[in-house]
Image (cartoon, one colour):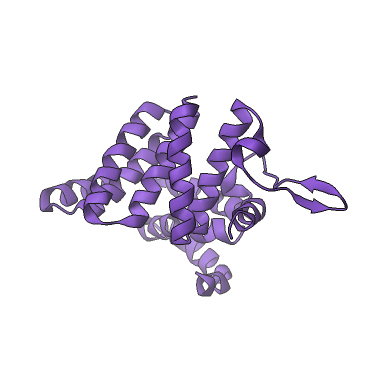
Length: 218
C-alpha cells in the first residue's frame, strides 16, 4: 500500500485516461480497487470524485457483483460468497438498514464457515453500523464491542477506525461518550482532550480516526 502511494500521481493520470476512454471499464475497475489507498493516505475527497465519475459512466451496472455471487454460490466458494454479500450489504447501508443487516448476517455465516477472519470482521462492522443507523443501539453494542476487539487483534487499522466510529456515534446518541466508549482522556496542559471527528465521518477523517485507533491500543 505504501508503494502504491508513491505512485499516486501516476494512478491519478491512469484513472483520468481510463475514465475518458471510449471503453472506460478498465478505468472503472481501477477506481473500484483504490478506495482503501485513498482512505488510508488522506485522499478520500479526491477518491470520491473519481468514484462518482466512474459510477456516472454506468450507474446501473451491478453485473460483476451479481455474477461473482452467482459463481461463488454455484461452486460452493463460501469465502467469495461472503465477501460479495458484504459488498451488497454496504450498497444498502444508508438506504435500507434492515436489508443491510440481513445481508451482513448471511455474509458472516459464510465467512465463518470459510475461516475468513477478515471477511467476518467486515460483516460485523457493517452489521453494527446498520444497527446503529436503525437506532437499535442496544443490539449494536455487543456487535461493536466484538468488532473492535477482533479488528484490534487482527491489526486492521482501517476496519478498527470504522468500528470505533460506530462506538462513538452510538455513544453520542445514547449518553455519556467518555464513559460509554471507555477511552482514557489524553491530557495536554492539564485539560482532557478527546479524539475529534469530521462531519463526514471515518471515511474523510483519516488523521482523527487513526489517532483514536492508536490511542486505544496497548
